[in-house]
Image (cartoon, rainbow, N blue to C red; front, side, top):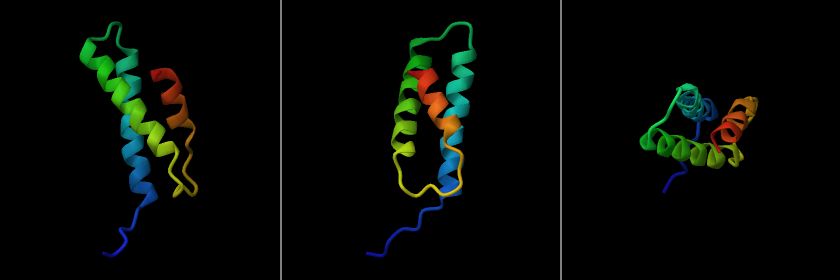
Length: 71
């Protein structure tokens, strides 16, 4: 089975979608249970993504900040 090429820029864009969602939900004056569950899922996703070894020049600071603010 051939190896699947991973595009770090595409993965970064997907991770930034999670950052944006976490930030938007955290900015709400009040959150529903579903909002918090979405934050939790996206924080988990970002923790996995930060641990990947294919990052090159991508700035991981926004991902790490979102993890901290969403926890």
